[in-house]
Image 1 (cartoon, rainbow, N blue to C red):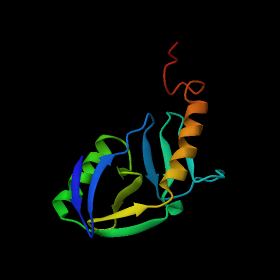
Image 2 (cartoon, rainbow, N blue to C red):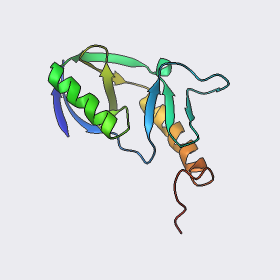
Image 3 (cartoon, helix red, strand yellow):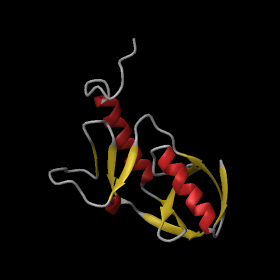
Amino acid sequence: MMKVVATQELNLELNKTEYKLQFSFRKKNGVDGDFWFTPSGLCKLWIGCLYTQPVGKIDKEVYENLIKELKENKTEFFKDGSNYYTTFGENAIAEVSNANQLLYKIEREWDARKVGEMWVDYQE
């Protein structure tokens, strides 16, 4: 857990999932939704679908550490309670108000496809 102070104090924890998540700056042609899975099981989430509300700027070193942590853990979100946050702009944090909804849909599709697509080994 990392304590971050922007305009409010946040206790950020990585949003760890079974799948890997990465923002995409372009929506994939032929995809109806706002996310898709690559053949290797990486989930790409179109950044244009996010409802973000900037929370405030943070120290550059803290910002860089947050980015590093996100990349190392192959995710894009932090959690503080039931709220989701991501890095935003130049040394800033933003709350993503529709993250719960998006992550729920991603999780459902992942669960439906992970074994059949061989993204994970089947465990009996």
